Image 1 (cartoon, helix red, strand yellow):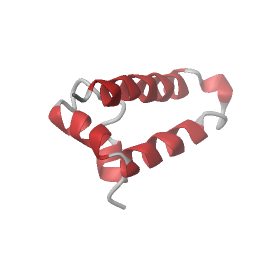
Image 2 (cartoon, rainbow, N blue to C red; image 1 turned 135 degrees about the vertical axis):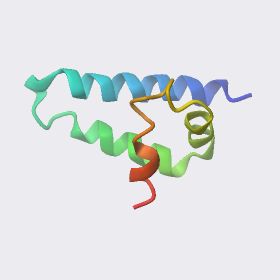
Image 3 (cartoon, rainbow, N blue to C red; image 1 turned 90 degrees about the vertical axis):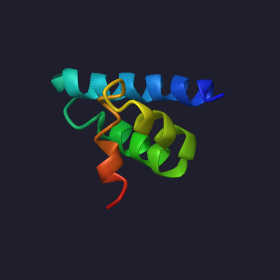
Image 4 (cartoon, rainbow, N blue to C red; image 1 turned 180 degrees about the vertical axis):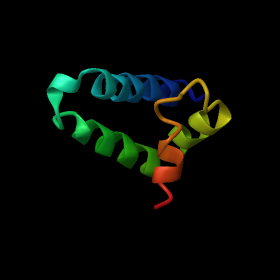
Length: 69
């Protein structure tokens, strides 16, 4: 039922991981974090998937507290 949300979580996680692991991009990938945060805020299915298993989505889990602010 939440397969599409899980697939989107995969994509967002890959982007966040790349932003963290490729320092040569400088701030170029900061927009990816902003996009991921906006998706997290606006999509209840993504929040549900991450809340169900935050360890699996360790790149997205920090957005849970960031989205409250």
